[in-house]
Image (tube, rainbow, N blue to C red; front, top):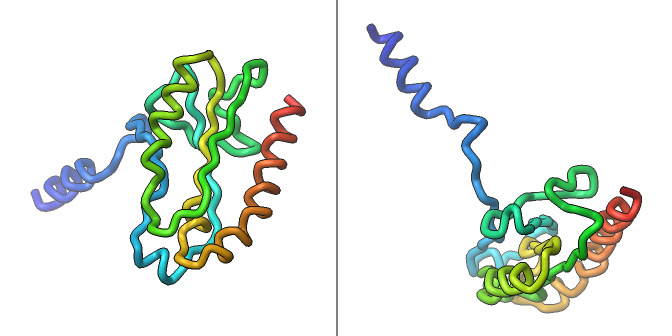
Length: 141
Protein backbone atom coordinates (compact mmCIF):
# COMPACT_ATOMS: atom_id res chain seq x y z
CA UNK A 1 0.00 0.00 0.00
CA UNK A 2 2.84 2.35 0.84
CA UNK A 3 4.45 1.63 -2.55
CA UNK A 4 1.21 2.47 -4.35
CA UNK A 5 0.91 5.74 -2.44
CA UNK A 6 4.54 6.59 -3.29
CA UNK A 7 4.00 5.79 -6.98
CA UNK A 8 0.85 7.93 -7.17
CA UNK A 9 2.67 10.80 -5.42
CA UNK A 10 5.49 10.62 -7.95
CA UNK A 11 3.09 10.61 -10.88
CA UNK A 12 1.40 13.74 -9.56
CA UNK A 13 4.74 15.52 -9.30
CA UNK A 14 6.07 14.60 -12.73
CA UNK A 15 5.34 17.18 -15.40
CA UNK A 16 4.19 15.84 -18.73
CA UNK A 17 6.37 16.41 -21.81
CA UNK A 18 3.27 17.65 -23.59
CA UNK A 19 2.69 20.49 -21.10
CA UNK A 20 3.55 23.63 -22.99
CA UNK A 21 5.08 26.52 -21.15
CA UNK A 22 5.69 29.96 -22.52
CA UNK A 23 9.17 31.27 -21.91
CA UNK A 24 9.10 34.76 -20.52
CA UNK A 25 11.59 37.58 -20.43
CA UNK A 26 14.23 37.13 -17.74
CA UNK A 27 13.18 38.88 -14.54
CA UNK A 28 15.99 39.69 -12.13
CA UNK A 29 16.08 41.39 -8.75
CA UNK A 30 17.85 44.57 -7.79
CA UNK A 31 20.29 42.32 -5.94
CA UNK A 32 21.39 40.97 -9.33
CA UNK A 33 21.99 44.53 -10.48
CA UNK A 34 24.23 45.19 -7.51
CA UNK A 35 26.29 41.98 -7.73
CA UNK A 36 26.14 41.76 -11.53
CA UNK A 37 25.32 38.83 -13.79
CA UNK A 38 27.07 36.83 -16.44
CA UNK A 39 25.89 37.14 -20.02
CA UNK A 40 23.09 34.85 -21.18
CA UNK A 41 21.39 35.69 -24.49
CA UNK A 42 17.98 34.17 -25.17
CA UNK A 43 16.20 34.57 -28.51
CA UNK A 44 12.42 34.48 -28.18
CA UNK A 45 10.42 34.13 -31.40
CA UNK A 46 6.90 35.45 -31.90
CA UNK A 47 4.96 34.85 -35.13
CA UNK A 48 1.33 34.79 -36.25
CA UNK A 49 1.29 31.15 -35.04
CA UNK A 50 2.51 32.05 -31.55
CA UNK A 51 1.63 35.68 -30.91
CA UNK A 52 1.41 35.45 -27.14
CA UNK A 53 3.65 32.50 -26.34
CA UNK A 54 7.31 32.91 -27.25
CA UNK A 55 9.35 30.08 -28.68
CA UNK A 56 13.00 29.85 -27.65
CA UNK A 57 15.20 29.58 -30.74
CA UNK A 58 18.90 29.53 -31.53
CA UNK A 59 21.19 29.18 -34.54
CA UNK A 60 20.59 25.42 -34.73
CA UNK A 61 16.87 25.34 -33.84
CA UNK A 62 14.83 27.99 -35.68
CA UNK A 63 11.42 26.77 -34.53
CA UNK A 64 8.49 28.48 -36.30
CA UNK A 65 10.78 31.07 -37.90
CA UNK A 66 9.90 31.43 -41.58
CA UNK A 67 13.02 32.66 -43.37
CA UNK A 68 10.94 33.84 -46.35
CA UNK A 69 9.21 36.44 -44.17
CA UNK A 70 10.55 39.70 -42.79
CA UNK A 71 12.30 39.34 -39.44
CA UNK A 72 12.42 42.15 -36.90
CA UNK A 73 14.77 42.00 -33.92
CA UNK A 74 13.70 43.79 -30.73
CA UNK A 75 16.71 44.44 -28.51
CA UNK A 76 16.61 46.18 -25.15
CA UNK A 77 19.50 48.04 -23.59
CA UNK A 78 20.97 48.66 -20.15
CA UNK A 79 18.71 47.39 -17.34
CA UNK A 80 19.73 48.99 -14.03
CA UNK A 81 17.06 47.22 -11.95
CA UNK A 82 16.72 43.79 -13.59
CA UNK A 83 13.05 44.21 -14.43
CA UNK A 84 11.79 43.39 -17.93
CA UNK A 85 11.16 46.35 -20.26
CA UNK A 86 7.51 47.36 -19.81
CA UNK A 87 7.17 48.27 -23.50
CA UNK A 88 8.29 44.92 -24.90
CA UNK A 89 4.98 43.01 -25.10
CA UNK A 90 3.09 45.93 -26.63
CA UNK A 91 5.78 46.46 -29.27
CA UNK A 92 5.77 42.77 -30.24
CA UNK A 93 1.99 42.76 -30.61
CA UNK A 94 2.02 46.01 -32.59
CA UNK A 95 4.59 44.63 -35.03
CA UNK A 96 2.60 41.41 -35.53
CA UNK A 97 -0.60 43.42 -36.09
CA UNK A 98 1.03 45.49 -38.84
CA UNK A 99 2.48 42.67 -40.91
CA UNK A 100 2.93 38.91 -40.87
CA UNK A 101 6.55 38.56 -39.81
CA UNK A 102 8.98 36.97 -37.41
CA UNK A 103 9.63 39.03 -34.29
CA UNK A 104 12.70 37.97 -32.34
CA UNK A 105 13.02 39.43 -28.86
CA UNK A 106 16.65 39.43 -27.78
CA UNK A 107 16.67 38.87 -24.03
CA UNK A 108 20.09 39.64 -22.65
CA UNK A 109 18.85 40.82 -19.27
CA UNK A 110 21.51 38.55 -17.76
CA UNK A 111 24.34 40.79 -18.80
CA UNK A 112 22.46 44.07 -19.18
CA UNK A 113 21.43 44.14 -15.52
CA UNK A 114 23.95 46.01 -13.44
CA UNK A 115 24.17 49.33 -11.67
CA UNK A 116 27.42 50.01 -13.53
CA UNK A 117 26.59 51.05 -17.10
CA UNK A 118 30.05 50.29 -18.49
CA UNK A 119 29.77 46.66 -17.35
CA UNK A 120 26.59 46.25 -19.43
CA UNK A 121 27.84 48.22 -22.42
CA UNK A 122 31.01 46.14 -22.44
CA UNK A 123 28.90 43.04 -23.17
CA UNK A 124 27.12 44.46 -26.23
CA UNK A 125 29.81 43.27 -28.64
CA UNK A 126 29.33 39.67 -27.47
CA UNK A 127 25.54 40.06 -27.91
CA UNK A 128 26.15 41.35 -31.44
CA UNK A 129 28.39 38.37 -32.25
CA UNK A 130 25.72 35.94 -31.04
CA UNK A 131 23.13 37.69 -33.22
CA UNK A 132 25.49 37.66 -36.20
CA UNK A 133 25.92 33.89 -35.84
CA UNK A 134 22.14 33.49 -35.68
CA UNK A 135 21.53 35.68 -38.73
CA UNK A 136 24.26 33.88 -40.68
CA UNK A 137 22.45 30.59 -40.02
CA UNK A 138 19.14 32.15 -41.07
CA UNK A 139 20.66 33.24 -44.38
CA UNK A 140 22.00 29.74 -45.08
CA UNK A 141 18.48 28.27 -44.91
